[in-house]
Length: 446
Ligand SMILES: CC(=O)SCCNC(=O)CCNC(=O)[C@H](O)C(C)(C)COP(=O)(O)OP(=O)(O)OC[C@H]1O[C@@H](n2cnc3c(N)ncnc32)[C@H](O)[C@@H]1OP(=O)(O)O
Ligand SMILES: O=C([O-])CC(=O)C(=O)O
Image (tube, rainbow, N blue to C red; front, top):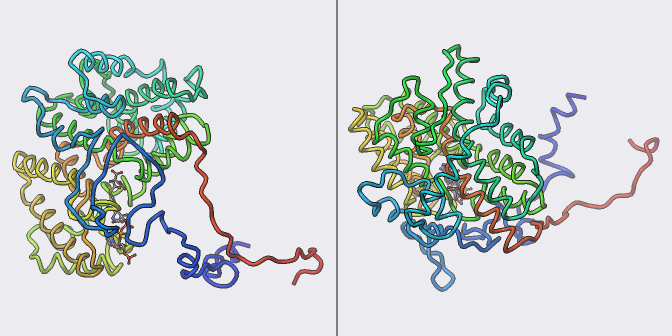
């Protein structure tokens, strides 16, 4: 039987199972929910975030520099126009995304307390659910933990918008320590390192707590916490169309609980074409640097790029991770901010050579894809984030988890918005393009 099953995929490419490419255009099926010109099929309305990567002028797509707005406010302004003494913006951004406007000082303080009051994990949760269940993959582990928290909720299936808000805030507050403890557990059990567990501190921001919990000596610089906080702000939302947010809304549209929706969204974010790209970029760049060295010439870098695009290097997928985007064309505004942060941090940490290599690789890779495909591609949010995390001593296993910590805010906001203003089960259609046959009793089959 296993021989039969082994041969199935090859056989599926022909005969009864094969779906001819032409059928997609014949029935006007939008592969990947994309229109002919690459723009996304509209599947919803939102007032939470706007992702701008092109303009439509007389129905024609015109590429432009990228812009990202949270509740109508340009994210670059949130970062660049903050008060000089305002070090941490993530909590304020959470408020903005969830409630729709920038909080005044009192509202912000109250909101921070709402979050920090929920930091602590249930009694014995750490011992029984994290230390007792080490896992090598922390994205998978977090999915388990989110589903586990369902059992600790006295009314888990209450899906009213208000109940969802409270459950979501609880998840936003608890996920940072869960991921740090899951990491410490992983390296203790599998990598044989010492185990240390620090208590999460209500007086620290989420970014500060992550650095505090991850480091044996508990110390971090204000600049390090500021950069991590900025990363969380830049990952907090990306409109209703990104795969993990859409997944979360698709799942919750059935009327199921928020734990199921978030677990699904985490699974979506893990993929290397989405949030998992930050990890994939690190692996790709490590491999490239191992192959040609940091002092390689542009010509040598071009040759490796050519090998990647020809499916002969890295994971043979033909993809250059950290490059390209479904919406952004000329630039991803988050990448511009992160690139500058990365550059500054590299100077501070004496890692300018790596930054410079990434920069040259980015320029050459985008130019090569443009040449081959005749499309504008840019480096995305994930291209420099891994290098930044590395300079913050955040381990590779946690890169995509940092994305989750930020994005839970967007997932929650879209989940609630969808409940309040759409409410309909998401159920598109798929055209049956097979034949119909008579049923043949078993003794008459060949
Ligand atoms: C947080 C985030 O999710 S940001 C995105 C993170 N993902 C990555 O960095 C992975 C690498 N990038 C990609 O796979 C893609 O650019 C995606 C998934 C981000 C966007 O995909 P799409 O919107 O389908 O890309 P788009 O329609 O613009 O692609 C057009 C062509 O360029 C190719 N292309 C786009 N990006 C890349 C890339 N990075 N490397 C190689 N080829 C690429 C596509 O394969 C496609 O080729 P085809 O016409 O021969 O099929
Ligand atoms: O919008 C997308 O498709 C992916 C992305 O950048 C994000 O979710 O941050």
